[in-house]
Amino acid sequence: MPEKLPYCKHVEKHILECIQGGVPIRQMLSSMQHLPYAPRSLSTMYKTYGEVIESERARINGAVGKRVIDHALVGDMENKSTQWAAELFLRSKAGWSPTSTNIEVEQETDPDLDESAADTLLTLLGINPDETPEEDNSGDTP
Image 1 (cartoon, one colour):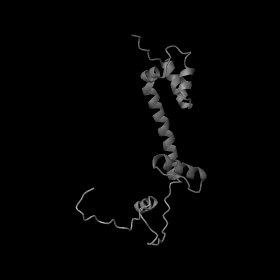
Image 2 (cartoon, one colour):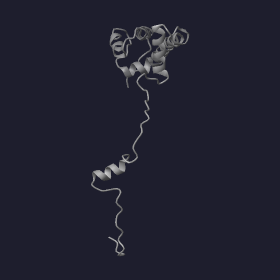
Image 3 (cartoon, helix red, strand yellow):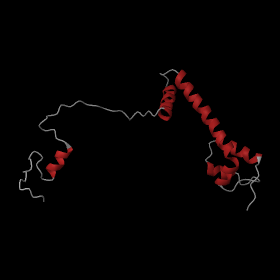
């Protein structure tokens, strides 16, 4: 069984700098291969440095989110950046979308022309839904 990769502060520092710079995870892994004790796979990197990665991502997401929310709450709504901040917050956290609007239109329908989906299907099959089938009084069951 291979030895567990030792934790290295130089690798941790490199990971933090990459996350703070927005470097994608695969590039981060590739760029640290010159360091001693650098993980060789994503799996090993997450096993050894997963807490550092998630903690730094949470810190950055929290800081950016706080700025956006503060700007959306306190900013002047005539300002485009305030409008952008408010829209970003609503889209990401409140499920809002500018295209998801319901348009309800009242339409008068002629009751003689209004038919159910079942009636339409029966008509397409050549069956008149208004005709009642003749009852068989012979007592025989088909």
